[in-house]
Image 1 (cartoon, rainbow, N blue to C red):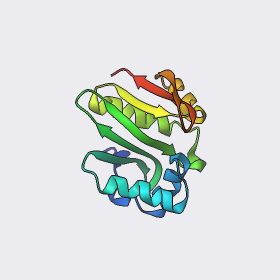
Image 2 (image 1 turned 180 degrees about the vertical axis):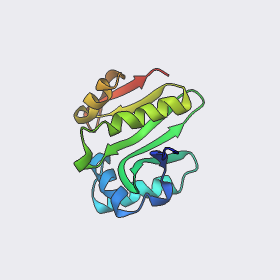
Image 3 (image 1 turned 90 degrees about the horizontal axis):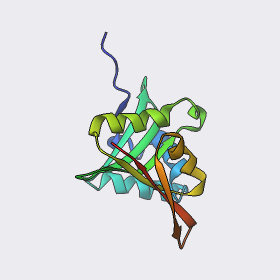
Image 4 (image 1 turned 60 degrees about the horizontal axis):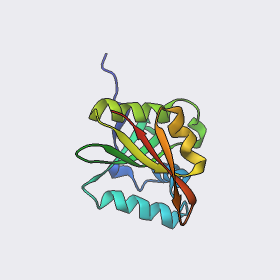
Length: 141
């Protein structure tokens, strides 16, 4: 029996309500306008990837990222509210690591830095004029 791919390219669905509801959980601007702007960013860029953790056609989590020569940079990662604490966020990070075999980096705020720390990322705080403090997160490849 062939195993169904769970972490897959869903860029074509970035503007669908199901993906939008998950984007709203992690986007700086979770308003409908902010979510649409975030989605358009992925649709109009060849460099940005938008993947989802999909099971039986349902999007359970989303991950927006960019592949550089020496790292994968996560721009956005979130899991549907009803699917929190089921390992989906960890599974998406693992899928990125196993696929690209290079360090993974992200920037985040206080409310989300725990997610990265629990997954083994090294975190370094730095001042940010808008947020006060943000964190650089790095997971070796």
